[in-house]
Amino acid sequence: MKNLSFLPEFLQKAYVFQGIEAFANLPYFQKDEEGNLVISPQYRRPVIDMHTHLCMAFVLPLRVDMAKTTEEVQYYLPADAKIDLHKYQSHNIPNMKKVKRDLTIMTLTKRGMRTTHTSANMLRDMDRMGIEKSLILAIDYPILSKNSEYVLQQCQKHSRFVGYGSVHPLSRGVEKKLDRLVELGAKGVKMHPSVQLIRPDHPKAIRLYRLCAERNLPVFFHCGPVGVEPYISRRRCRLIYYQRALEKCLDTVFILGHSGALELEKAIELEKLHPRVYYEICGPGLRSLRKLLLSVSLDRIFYGTDWPFYHQSIQLSKVFITTEDFPNKEEVRDKILYENAKNFLENYLS
Ligand SMILES: [Zn+2]
Image (cartoon, rainbow, N blue to C red; front, side):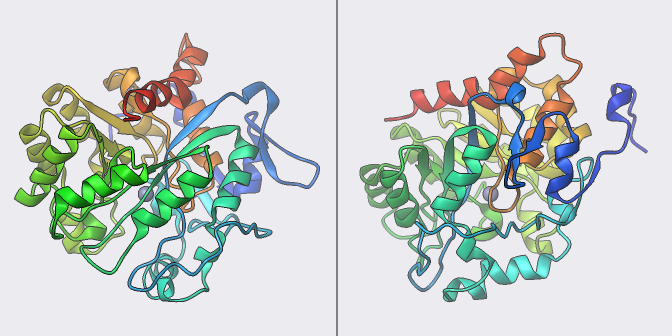
């Protein structure tokens, strides 16, 4: 049993919700006339979501109409699933097989949950939660995927989107590819060691991070093991490998997506090792998130949701709940939900 002595009483009680609808029981949310969950007026404020994805395609071109709205969004954590805010977020997903299928074999088709992961649907969800801007992250293989292009096209169309591209460290012509991404409007680069099947401290990955620094492009990591990936990927995502990468690239700006996930405590230590590291908080349960907020500088924390894996209310609730007893809570919430990301994006809009 973990030592919970740093937790106030309200963080020791259960936070279990039967579906997204049940979040309307929290003061932060309510239902609109059509029964959709929206943020309550007194909590509405500008928010920037620093971790989202759109429908992706591998091998074959993207064949989903991104301008289309559908009645419902099929989140990978379904809207009617039981959600325990103390759990690591992906551990709430009841059918991981279905998710994996949608992200692999179904990307060859025009069907699947993915057809609801459109720009139009994301914008509608953003409006309901008061989210002003979303950072969209692409993921590409060395060959046979053009997700960066699809993402950056959508960012050209919608001023509320900011895009990070992806260059696989083992692909040919990395420098040229990075320059091409910049031309297309990429503001940073996403690196996903688990999906891209490469360790974060691989020499070619280190080279990529240095080339990113030369171009003023931050690197957004999927950072840490989450426990639902294959064993080999889990090993690849151990924090020690990220640490080695950070130590070798002190000039590169890094965002640790999921804040180290199940190795959050090790991720906290990285703040001392690297002058330009930031934490994106989608994933960790309430207790871990609280620990992060009490351990690292609050200027280094970004709100993120990993839409369309999750409805945006889940992570918003966690921010509100974990800061409930902070003496300057409104100031802290503004920082995490908006100010930090706004300042950061302004600095790196090269
Ligand atoms: Zn993600």
